[in-house]
Length: 117
Image (cartoon, rainbow, N blue to C red; front, side, top):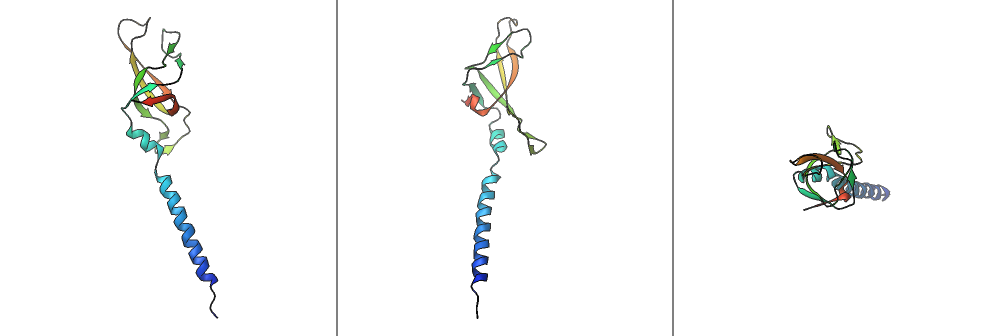
């Protein structure tokens, strides 16, 4: 007598392994690699946002300001970390009360707070 259960089980395990390999392919697309490809891109802040960490200035409204994406800090030593604001953006602008030259400062933002130009 020939049993068909063995053939069915092996087919079921091979189809489930092929499904898991398809899922693994989706996991191979790392958001940090996508983010690091965009380093150096020009960005614009698209949400109302004020920063308070620039010396000798009470607050600076960076809404609509343009800057440069300098670093993605969601990966450290090859491992993903849970950075709340993973995109480090450099701004260079004239700020009233800070002298004649432009002021360079960095701001950490989430991806939904800026847009690529």
